[in-house]
Amino acid sequence: MLTYSLDNHGNIPLYEQLYRAIKQDITRGTLSANEKLPSKRNLAKHLGISMVTVENSYQQLKAEGYIYSLPKKGFFVSEINLHHPPVEKTIRLLSHPETMPDENKSLLRLSNNQTNSETFPFATWSKIVRQVLNNCQNELVQPSPSKGILLLRQAIAKHLNDYRGMAVDPRQIIIGAGTEYLYTILIQLLGLDKIIALEDPSYPKIRKIYQQFNINQTYIDMEKDGISISKLKQTKAEVIHLSPSHQFPTGSILSIGKRYELLSWANQGNRYIIEDDYDSEFRFQGLPIPSLQEIDTLGKVIYINTFSKSLSSTLRISYMILPPQLLEQFEDKLNFYSNTVSNLQQYTLAYFIKDGYFEKHLNRMRLFYQRKRDSLVQKLLSSPLKNHITIHEDESGLHFIMTITSDLSEEKICQLALENHLLMTPISHYYHGKNRLFEKSFIVNYANISEKESDYIINVLSKIIL
Image 1: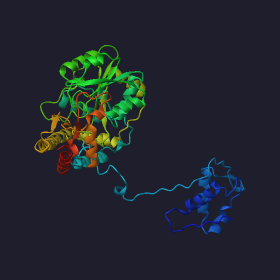
Image 2: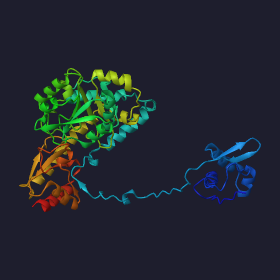
Image 3: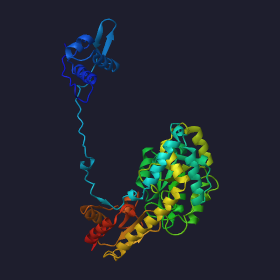
Image 4: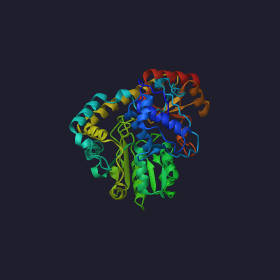
């Protein structure tokens, strides 16, 4: 007779304890194939438990194939061929995540691109979430269209028209969970056989995504007013991926002359421009830079933007605007994809934009980040470092470039900074080829740097350079 010690006062139900015990005996070979198990009544009496408990255990074992039953004969052990002896797995859970070892946890990262938690409009966002939960219950449980909820696409189209002067049909807008997802959709639309041109330097993740799909890539050198159009024309590229309004990491702006040259290049054959407008909302001097999409008259520009910079880096909502011919292809070939952003997030963001909160938030953030940038730049230029550093490209976006004048090599500066728990990322890190423009230059993303941290940065750099 099977004998097990079951705990009546434990957290695990009795039937599950019995099920686990019998399963363990089967997998270890204690119970042989085709061996008859005790009847439910006898086993219940022997263990001092109810027949219902034994019944539930046997039914679970039967459902998983460990045992089988024969009419009027009872339950028997199934024949199981174990290729490897069972190993008991143990899981150690840490009750306090902050105690988990992380060698990089104490590092201050100059290139940290996370947004500041102080800036997220938690009160307004939670208020809209409650309103959506109360007023949009039917809509929340309906499947979202592949392109995203119409209300959100309409709100984005109106915002782009009001803020950037872009005339966009909401039907052209595709909502996705992050720009990485939208890139994969574009790859499927454009085809795996296309040669894609990338700016050099550029964001490494973009290169890696195209590499994962074995897309042929070619790299175009940056000049002071954007990519080299002459170098682009020398390649066989059919698509170019660029950030014309605030290039990362150089911060350069593609000149109007080059914009029209680029559109002219795209108009020759089946070519497209992917315009990645990742942080165009944060321009601190003058009007917003007009987008390429705005001056494109032949449907050659695919416009991509995200709410990760303007709201939160963890709010994975991005969108792209497809030209009419690619929109047709999407609806014909890729419309079967489910939208990757939850209805709750889409409706919340839609009302956040539609009710004017997003515009107010952007105005607040521009002022907040401008003051933060000015404070850090002023501190740097009034510190003992002032004769050893130069600040570039600080008029827009959430980062600027700091060039250091020193006899130390770029690698040595990074090494000494790291020894002082300061992680510095040089511009050369973003190059595929040779760094021709920015020697000993480093990304400074000031969005998440506190006053105390800025003092620490100056002290570390002074210790290294002076």
